Length: 65
Image (cartoon, rainbow, N blue to C red; front, side, top):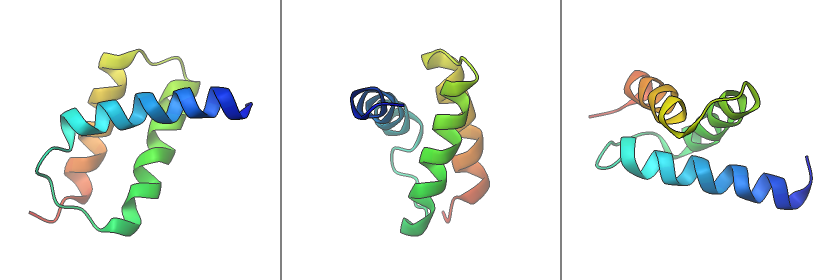
């Protein structure tokens, strides 16, 4: 994956996380795991709605509050 492609992927993950992770407290070290889950979903062909669903499931599994 080129730098430009990685930037676009990270932007999609960030946008999805802002929706599903709003006001959810997680360990700051887990943000790397959030991006890993997001990248795996995108590589598997997930659209934005599926990406949000996958990130939402993961964030709920690691939430602190």
